[in-house]
Image (cartoon, rainbow, N blue to C red; front, side, top):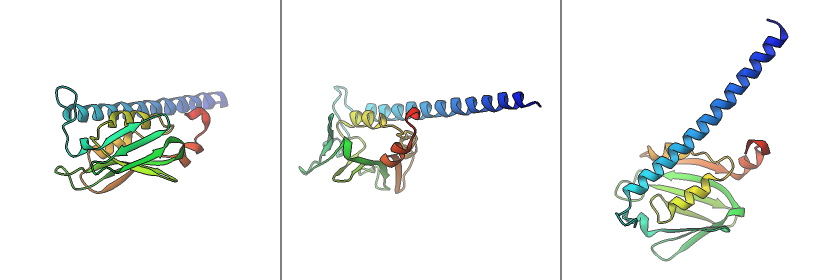
Length: 167
């Protein structure tokens, strides 16, 4: 093989690798959205109101500044978007008779824990998936777990380390 053929093959392999990586990322995000849509359709009444209790008693408010979660006991947790450092999914072995999957949003000065099925969770997930480098595959993995696990979805240090053109 001459050098131009080697370069051509290497370039083709690199293009194929990038195409496969992009397709995999797209597929994971699409599957995660479908899973959440399925959970929401299974956990709402005909008029759109939530029916999953006690999860629906937690109310998530997503704004341009940040996210807050009002708990049934009246406490409120929040984190600002510009302070968000890490997003994880926590799974437990408590289900199905108790909340067993949670969003964990960690900031340097605040944070909040939101159970899956909380009122306003769809808006939260949409906003989280817009974070650069968010791993939608963690949502897919969490949906199948029935044991105690912690799955990293996003870390600000990793997102900041990504080259700008990769976002």
